[in-house]
Length: 78
Image 1 (spheres, rainbow, N blue to C red):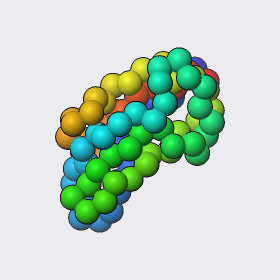
Image 2: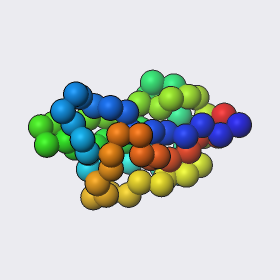
Image 3: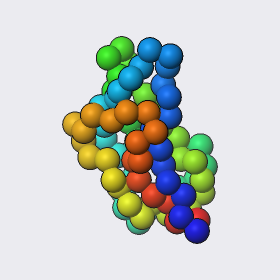
Image 4: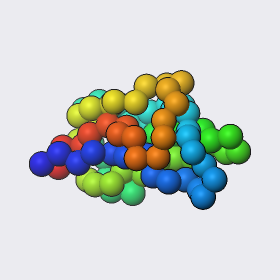
């Protein structure tokens, strides 16, 4: 089964975030709650946690890409 990694709503007034870096490589095992991605808003950097335990099989968002809440960042195979 595949689980999409989505950019959550990071604050009431936050309308977008910029992808900074992937903290895990493709093919790496990840644990639910573990930091996967770092994004930057206009005020702070935020680590996005894994929504599930499995293997990171897709990195859709790339560094410097501007994303809106709900954007797909990648995919985990569970």
